[in-house]
Length: 328
Image (cartoon, rainbow, N blue to C red; front, side):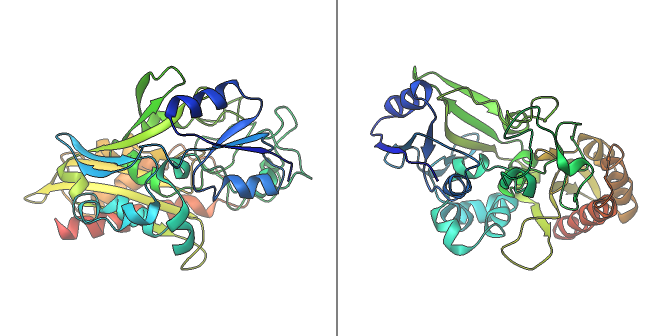
């Protein structure tokens, strides 16, 4: 781990300017991912800018839906009564992530910024296009059981590891960003993370010095009837092999609106509009759910060790849809 300086920012402009203008500066809130990567020398920052005193807090119902400050802790959001009642998939995704200790430390903004757990990325003895563009991707022909089957490229098939972003993508969440000039912009979360293509080292649309301020989630019937189902190798403290976030509005047995997203299978949180189109207006039956699940995996490109994820993802989606429909 390299030496670094520390700055505790008292204003957003101070923080964003330091990261925009500094040489290798980075924001730190909970630090649960960043410090790990620095210890591994995967990331080497010359300065850490502490943003914990900034006013990016609050969990509140607005005229449009739910607003969550970027510096709220995962545990506080996951256990919040409003989130539990009106946005259950968000609560479930948070409380199924990491461990209680980490959830008490990790911020919402930081969680959205977490990086892949690909072993080749985290071990600097191996080449990795995310760390060093052009060096290669050993996962393509190496051990790739945990890697992506959707959204990959010849440069990278690393899986996005998070849970929260999958639920937020399914529920049409938007992230509010702020730059060093104090200018803010709103980005749909489905567009926030980037596909690897030929530039896997760039993972989000954030510009240098830009900071996540808040996340908003629209109020909707399918948000109230939503769930997050996570399948993993062990019951706790493990990343998803496959996960599904779904929301359904079912009236008189017919699906009026549907939202579907996957985790554990994509190089980014994976929204499946193909599945949603087949669900809309269809009867809420197992046959409908299986047809939608097949459509969701139609473009999957599994590798040698992760072919099982295609069937697992389909079954996970069917189970999640069945669970939500039963509560409608």
